[in-house]
Amino acid sequence: MSDQVQVVNSLSIIESINPNQVQTVMQKILQFQTIVQQNLKEEHDYGKIPGCGSKPTLLKPGAEKILMLMGVTSEYHLIEKVQDYEKGFFAYTVKCVLSRNGQTITEGLGHCNTKEKKYLSDKQDPYTLSNTCLKMAKKRAQIDATLTIASLSQIFTQDLEDLTDEFETQKPLKRNVKQAEVVYHCKACGKEVSEKVFNYKNLGLCMECQKEVQNQAVSQ
Image (cartoon, rainbow, N blue to C red; front, side, top):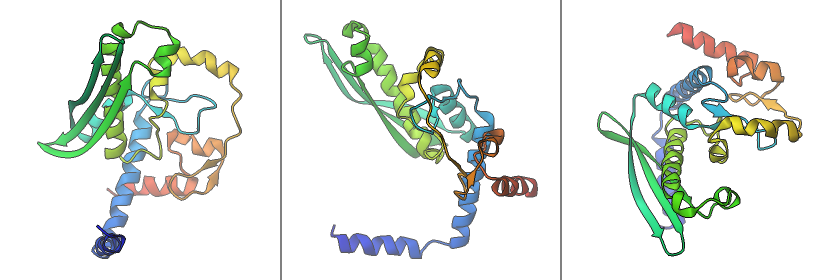
């Protein structure tokens, strides 16, 4: 397909969109993100690692809660498998399919192998890590799909998820890492806000956007 055809198709999609409907959808997304942030617990459902970016990392318990809130089910497919018993190398790629009432909504992919730095540094026996890698690939696929279906990529990240398998083990790191100064911005309008306002009920919103969300919730 040529670039010109792609541009025409994109414009056709844009022209067919109802602006009022788009605004309603964006408000619903914001409301759902607010609900998620109010109900997830830090150090259990998501974790923050100082010095590793401003976004917290979504963990498996948090992903499971979000999927329950949305009423979707998970199905996993092993789409690639490497099991080299001679060299002790194992790798798995898993696809997580999220569906509701039998209808597929979105998919996520996760991969893990025994040559990842975290496993090599621990000098663990690769033959005993085969099942661990399979479970990790499954978990990564689930979180990838969850971030997509709930439009949560601007709130959470997945990149550091496997560094916090057991979040308690990361606490000593907080004492040794100097955290850079953070500038907070409202997740809805981008306005710069204070840390206190940003962290109010874990909303990440300025005062004006907080009032707007509250008014919308009351009117429904």
